[in-house]
Every structure is written in structure tokens, then in C-alpha cells.
Length: 252
Length: 242
Image 1 (cartoon, each protein chain N blue to C red):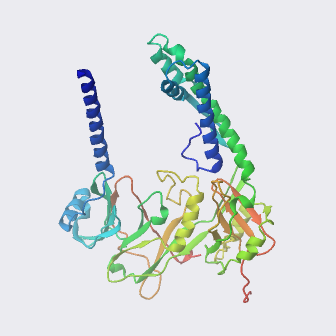
Image 2: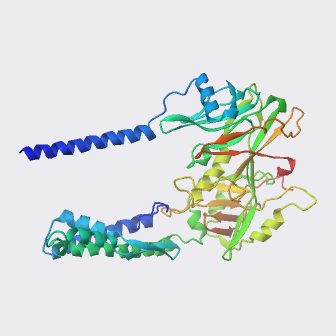
Image 3: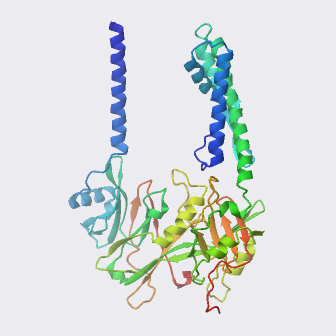
């Protein structure tokens, strides 16, 4: 009788231990986010992650979803900067910080390219009045083992975005774009966990890219002086890429 | 094993998986009966499952990768464990080898599946990719294209008139690119045919581009491309044709 009880007891202990371990794993990896840090703490964390950010003033906290936030800020040197925050391993981490404001695309979900978000923080000295984004794919062809492939050229425009009151902003993928992106994704044999297909269209000509065309108040295409200059860093894991600057020649 | 989470699931893969595992279950049952019901049922099942484990090597066959077993690691592990108690190995030996043999059942199921899938869903037929066109719509992909609407009736009426044609990839590429003097490029396939369902259960999905004359369809299923043409344009008639 005594042996039987102790065996049961051991079993219970193991079960309990397992539950605690599983609970710990859940807490670490999957528990929903706690509240986002306040401004002062954000500034401190930014400067800790990347000393050159010299964050001075947080402009806004923009929620892209529950676990991804875009925080534009101004550095002490007057640079209009961008910071990307992600909830990982039970803490808000700085995924990327850069002291320039040119638009970038953030793939917040590697399995869902339709959820990509474009963010920016344009330096007012560049005097960008309005701008347009383009989803594009270069025309491409190849022949593999005598089998021909052709990839039609694609260029889809977004609605015109006016520089409003704020220097910063964000844009989700327009509906017309998502229709095409969804089709691409459904057909792609690389549609598997881990988001393995490359975002970099230059290395992978069949992939789509995003470009933009900024205009000055006179309606001319403008090249930016200030929104490019800056430095930054990205921690591993987050896919954030620059939006290509288009010129008139790039418009099809 | 037939399980491969990288491959999109389809009716044939599901059926073959169910069939091969059912066959294995049946074989386990029959072996157990024949052996005079020696030993415990549960142990027999687990033994078989462990016996499946092998050192395999991937061999491409018929367009898929077959995992051909080379070394029966599971059987060896079981031998090492069972030999420690007298008589154990002799009781369960058949099940261990049955497990190893199961690898070949899976390979056979895989190949049968490839054949069946090719028979049910021929990769070179338009109907495989464009089975349900009732919800189809056009999305303009290139600024050089005219605004066009889909004439759904014309498309569906021609559903059995698809003709295969050659993909002249290099020629199309050269024609489209602007000349040296400049000028805009004109894309040959500037429309997307969206909301189209492939044949039910095929597990196939293709991106379908429509040619600017409304009669050509470039079907891209990811690893393959096919070009089909119809006699009549699927665009709605526009009066101000130039």
C-alpha cells in the first residue's frame, strides 16, 4: 500500500512540474503584451539600444497591431527618426531604430504579406507636399531545363498621400494590392512557415517591391536631402526594408 | 512517411495517407492474430511504430521526393531494448520488421498518389486551374492597359475551348520593353484574373494573367506555367474602341 501511494505521489509531482514548465513557456513566448512603456522610458530604451539615436522627443505611438508599434521621434540633433517595437519573449523590444525618416516597409507577419505596413517620418525641410506609393514587379523571364517562364511587369499605384499636420504616418496595403499579393502567395510553393521567401526583389526578380514618388508643393518630383541621412540598426528577425525612391523614368 | 507538412494538402494526399495507415493498422491486427495473440497489443503497436524509424535517403521520383529507407534504426533500437528480457524480442520481432516494411507502403502510396493526382487534375489542362469562374474578376496590373471589365458569360461559355500555346518568354520580354528612344513599356499580360477556383481537392492554385487582347491566359501555378488561348475576347465590349 505504501509503495502505491508514493508512486501516485511521484506521478502527481511530475504532472505538476510539467504544467509549471508549460506555463512558463507560454508566459515567455505567447502571453499577450503588457502595456507599452511611457515616453520617458521609451527615450531611455532607444538611447540604450542605439546611442546615436539621441532620442529627444517621442512624436507618437502608432499601433500596427497588438504586438507591433511604430514610434516616430525627433533626435536631439533634429533628425526625424523612426523606431519599430515588437512584443517578443515577454517584453517590448526595439526591432529597429534609424535616424532618418524615408519610408520603409515592415512585414509584421511573415506569413501574411498583405499585412505589410509602410511607415515614414519625413523631415519638413524636404518640403514634401504629397506622395504616392507603388507596388511593382519587374518584367522577368527565364528558361529552366528548356521550360520557359515569363513574369509580367506589374505596377500598382496607391492613393495620393498628403503630408498632413504630422511629419510621420503609415499606410496599410491598399485593397487592389492585396488582391494581387494574395494570389501570389496562394500559388507560391514557398508558402510555408518561417516566411522564407525573400522580400528583396533585386535578388529575387519574381518578388514584388514597393516604391514611392514624393512631390514638392509645385507638383514636381523631388529628391530628398534630409530624410535619407541617418544611421540605424535592426535586430535580427524583423523584415524591414527601404521603399525605393522612384523617378519619372520608373513610372510605367 | 507520407506526412510532409511542406506540401499543400489535397484530396489525393489525404486519401493516400488514410489508406496507407489503415493498411498498416490492418497488418498489425492480422499479425497479432496469426501470432496466436502472444504479447500485449499495445506493445505490439508501439513496436511497429518505432520500427518505422529508419535512416532514409531522399530520392526524386516522378516529381516528388521519396524517402527510401536504408538502415532500420528503429528495429535495431528495439532489438537492443528487447534482448534484455528473455523471449521478448522473439515475441515482438515480427512487429518491428512490419514497422520497417511500412516505409515501403508509404512510398507506394506516395507514387500511387502522384499518378492519381495527375489523372484527376491534369497539370496541362486549363480546367484544372480554372474550374469555377463564376466569381472571376479582373484587376488591372499595369498602367499601360485599358480599363477593362470581365464578360463573365463569354468566359464561361468558352470553358471547353481552351487551346494550349507556347510561352514565347524571350520574345514577349523584348517586345514589351521600351525602345531606346524612351517611351512607356507596354505589358502583354497586364490583367489579373482573380477569384478563380481550381478543381476541388486539387490543392493547386495559380496566378492567372490575361493578355491585353482578352484571349490569352498565362497560368502560373508556382512551379509551372501554362499559356492558354480562347477564340473570343473575354472583355466586355467597349464602344469607344480606337
